[in-house]
Amino acid sequence: MRKRTRLLALLLALTLLAALPVSAGAAAKKTGTPLQDCHKVTLTHTDTTQENKSVVRVWSAKTALPEVDEELDAITSAWADEIGPTLPKAANKTEKNSRVDIEIRYSRTGLTWMSFVLQARTTYHRKLTGQAIATRTFDMTTGERIRLTDIFDADSEAWALLADSVRETCAGYFPDEEADEAALAALCARSALEETEFSLHGMSLVLHIPAEKLYPEHFTLMEVTLFYPDIRPMMTEKAQEETDNLTYYATCALTFDDGPTRTNTTLVLQSLMETGSRATFFVIGNRIKTFADLVQREHDEGHAIGTHNWTHANVTKISAANIRSMPKKCRAAMIAAIGIPERYDRVPYGLYPQMVKNKVGWSYIQWSLDTYDWRGRKTATVLKTVKDQIDDGDIILCHDIKDNTPASAKAVANWLQENGYMLLTVDELMAKDGVRLEPDTVYYRCKDGDTSKKSR
Image (tube, rainbow, N blue to C red; front, side, top):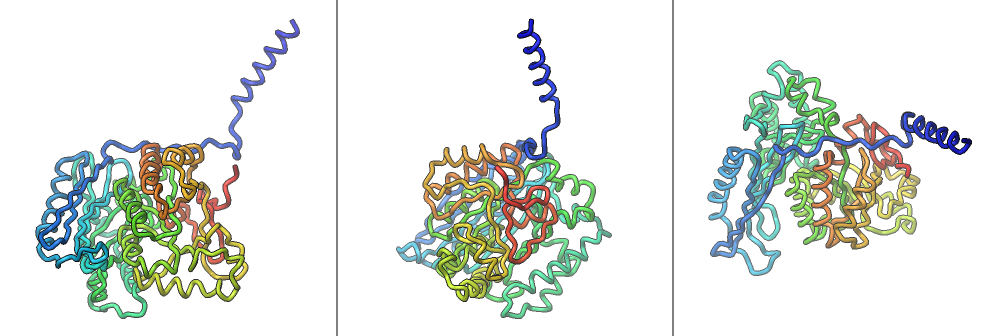
């Protein structure tokens, strides 16, 4: 009888415990809306080697709507026909290339909208010699094209904000050069703003403006970014609904250290393009000049870029003077490559205390999920680590110099999106909660504004 009584008491206790609310420290992980069928895209490419050995690579997209595919194909085909015949002769060596890469990048927002950024990047001896850009945003359930005038009403305060942002951002590129003032004023005019190429992402609206419009002989893109928390109140009702991504999705940021490197960084960029993902690259300062074309490509393809110190040395073994000299050298190299300085830094091996102690002045981005891809782990192992540890607001550490990372990055990005995550840049991850990056401050993640180290 006593045993039966104790058993019933135990069962009652277990029932009561199950009914208790979960403590904050053991809160369930946020889950988001799985990838919608209308947001699924498959990218493929064809290469054509011309008689003079120049190469034309054209990407094509298969989406949920054939009419969208046809419109995108019409743009890319026209570029191939126009640019292909103009390519100069290529030498036999890879670094003496002559090619045009006509690419399609895509990003989703909300449950039905999707943006496509089409770029024709012409390179000769790995130097960017020309760039064409076109953007399209569609409702992927109806095929309706979405324009900026569908996002902001005619009398919205956003138009003035857009003009101010274009002026401030574009004038900040290439700080040692003067922007064409008349051309800049023209870009800020209301009629021009309404026709500016733009794309929508997880937490931002981005205006894409060719640098050559203001700075001759610069063929990179200038990106004017406005974060949703700052502009959603100014949007139309439908646009507010389609940019309310924190209601629909959990968030995280994919980050890559130690690059650039010729082959693997290139393949990582391709993996990100194929999965419709944007990431954040932490590049080593003394590698920027050698691989300036890759850093420029990272920027032009919409990824965020920070530094990984000037060298990959252990900062505890570097003099204070050399530590404090890093920002000036990194800034100069970054501006030479993309026209603007770095946004923030990640210290090799995560040894930020020495940097903070010397008041270097950078914001420091750590991580809350280490994939350990630098150990040469197989893709399945990297993916399992992410599946087991991922949480809303995580910053995921990867390394784009490793041979296994391109495949792992693709698998991780696909799984995250299929399981309710929206991939953001570090800037977007912080902006979603109104976190402003401060100098000599360390950030591990961003979950509901909490940027501290994640407890295990």
